[in-house]
Length: 183
Image 1 (cartoon, rainbow, N blue to C red):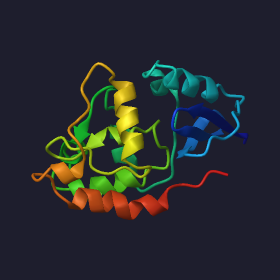
Image 2 (cartoon, rainbow, N blue to C red):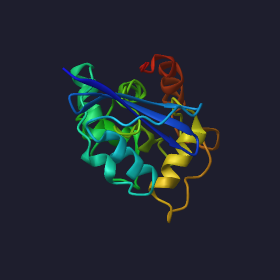
Image 3 (cartoon, rainbow, N blue to C red):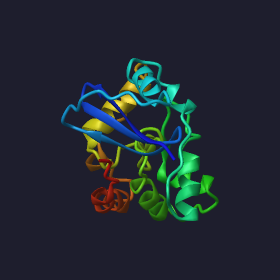
């Protein structure tokens, strides 16, 4: 088993991916710029391409994360959300065959250990507001704008959406402290 680390810089700091035998196992943002690090599997090159504007590049990266069967199902569906688009928690719950499980989907989304590559940032609140994001709304806004520069950004954040379920924000706020740590 060969474990490596890919680190790239982007306008909000750094992004790190832990790579095991060519498969991304964990990934996270770091607000403090870290030294660039190239891995032997080419993940760094794909991440660089993404941040340089080739936003569909991440689709080429294989991923595998530890989680429950339900979490795995949600994370698999996240990878099917097209670049430049968003989906609500409710719609995502429908895609996993549990249309009344928006809250459980939110928990699975918030516990995603492979940020960005498993695009949990593309999930928004019912009604179109951004909702929460483990790394903060500045990251979520930046990522969505980066992926769809020709489209206007969604309207504000969850405080502006009276029709949305406030539990969606609570779920992501509570789970924020459980992000994977990559050394």
